[in-house]
Image 1 (spheres, rainbow, N blue to C red):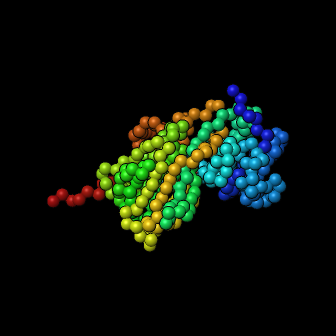
Image 2: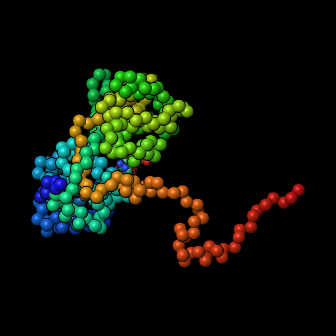
Image 3: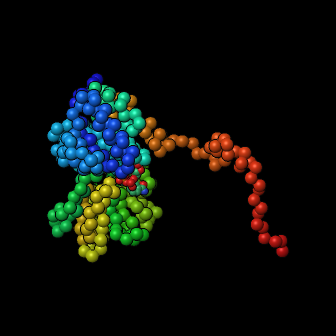
Length: 324
Ligand code: NAP
């Protein structure tokens, strides 16, 4: 089944170096040659040194059929928070390191984009988290997150003492460095590093991962994403700083006299994939999922021209203590 062909494309990028700028320029040329209308996010256009077809980010979903993000997962996260919930399909050209969310390789974007423009793609929905800081009964700050919300203190290696409620039911009260509240999308990011599970992105669940809990009985927990999560601090002190960060890119500062409310966003972002997209393939190719444990002396890993050098290296003399 074909999806809707794409005629108008919005482009967003975090231009961090010349190589990204080069990819962007050839992308714009390619799309214009192909007869597409191209709109550049204003800051992206400024960094490219042009004002032609530049629009503020929030205007792009009004005129474009698709947003192409040129960058790493970080750029994709930023674009998702800015315009993802408008429902506009998004696809990424990966000029970052991992590129979990950005499917297309920068040196080979023409063929996949030609297919997408012809409607040979499908849309995958990913939900976001909406995090609010509740102070004196009112939400005073809020942010979206596609990966995760992290709650922690302001000092390194400093524990905070908090209770977690799921739909107003107490789950636990713990002392820890903090708490990661992750979407399935974020399960391969910070949550993974903290010992959380990898979650099928199509599941409607939220993952809670305590960060360095001072307990032997505290494990990651997965629950239905229709539930609300509330965090209250045990010692409510308006001088104790708490940082609530969303996707590691938005930092909201508050104190332990506040409570934090996290719930699933009502709308989802739409990620555009080619028909052959396969999440397991992404896991295998990007993080080596399922690779066997290798013995450190596996010969094939040593470049051939170095083998003889290594073999000829004299054995190091052991510095043994004199016998008594
Ligand atoms: P960054 O610190 O510059 O890069 C974080 C790394 O995480 C990048 O390699 C990025 O991939 C990768 N990443 C981001 N989202 C991912 C996802 N959903 N699945 C797998 N890998 C992902 O920060 P950033 O680029 O602005 O990204 C912010 C995210 O970084 C946060 O949401 C958090 O999840 C993650 N993070 C992880 C750790 C950790 O694992 N210890 C610490 C801090 C932040 P690209 O190279 O393609 O951009």
